[in-house]
Length: 262
Ligand SMILES: [Cu+2]
Image (cartoon, rainbow, N blue to C red; front, side, top):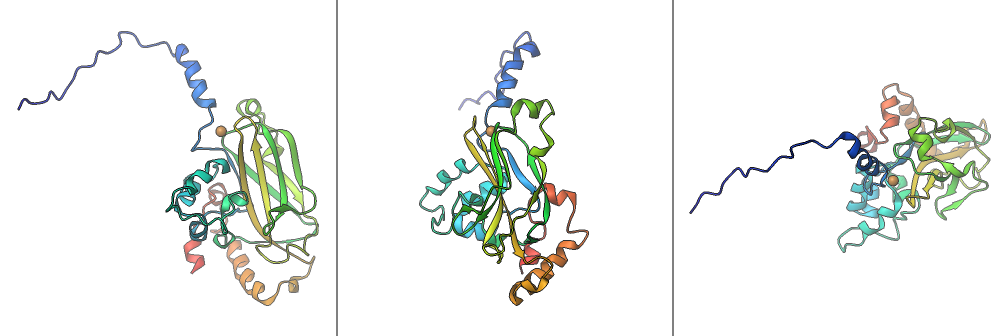
């Protein structure tokens, strides 16, 4: 047998193309929507992150995709449910509510009162001009409760402003004032605070959900006994200095989830 030549000389170009010629290509690559790597998430207050309950409801492929890229768009997820062994359970996983991420995976339940002002932060990594809103959503019906709390009809996450560094600050940092939704959102899991963004050029939807319970103003006893114990220690843990770091907010994974869940 003849030995296979192990080195095949490849002719090298005699000249390197000018970087200017590469510029259009680079710009195209930068601006093209990237299917598997996207776009934004609500970074504060802590939002739902996919975990074991999501894997059980939505299957492993979808859960893996969300864990790989917490800014991913919803439209890329349904195809991952198609395989016979995807583990997707349509009755338990609604991809259009919180991207299917399950309440049971969240150990960061906010305790809020009507009239309270809450600071919200959003992380946008790739812009797509579009519309957005932050609303309270009835989780059982996937229905906005009352009026949207913040609403951008158009011009949210505009590409040109983003790359020029002139994106309006209120796209990513703003306050909301909570209406009295105690009647519908009195138990954790009843409602979510949802950040919703649709990039119209990319035709992609991004969503993050914050879990909360609304208690009567100034009345701690409004929590039933089961919830009081549950939220009592969870809130206490939430106040520990090592629990709340900037890194934790920027990286919406649950650093201590397995410890807390057991
Ligand atoms: Cu994109």
